[in-house]
Amino acid sequence: MKASPSRWLFAYCLNLPLLVFFSQSFFVGSANWGIFCGLLLLASLGWCLCLTFPKFVHAFAMGSLVTAAGQFLPIVHFVVGVLTISVVGMVSPSNSMEDMQAGVFVFPLFWEGLAGSMIVGLLMAFTAILLGLFFHMIWPASGQKRDRLASSRQSNFSGKAASGPEPGPQLGP
Image 1 (cartoon, rainbow, N blue to C red):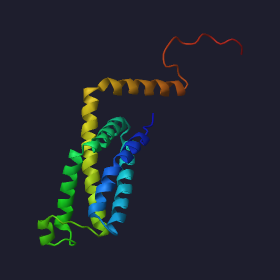
Image 2: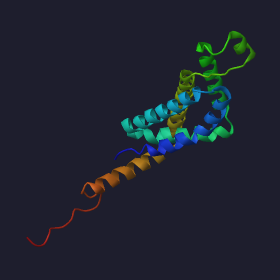
Image 3: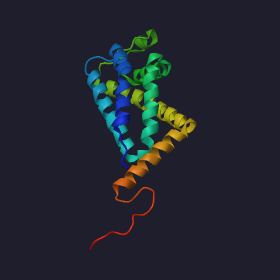
Image 4: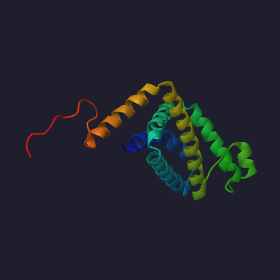
């Protein structure tokens, strides 16, 4: 049975509000287009990952839902944001040393927005993957039940009986 990456894509979209809200404080001008392109690239990468590894979709979607719920107490999100601002700030020509020491960061360039969204997205995806695998390890029965249902549906559609006795002889020519 083919995996449904739409579950992960839904969870991905739930993760966007905090990112977009806080990025407006630091990224201006064409950097916003960089963020937009980075988000599209991350969505494409996640979709391809889910298509490539179908058994991985459930854990990835579950972890993404947990990180989305974590926006109400965004400790991990703030840590990832501070790391991202620090990394982009170190390589950015837009901020002087005095600005960085004062804690003033403004990123106007396209590549700064792209790099910022990619760093945040990849760190949050890695966090979601770890959380999803952790929850899958704690509650493996839900994954096994889902896999059994999927395999029984697949065998029903292939023309073979999933279980039960073989049909009797056919009457007629």
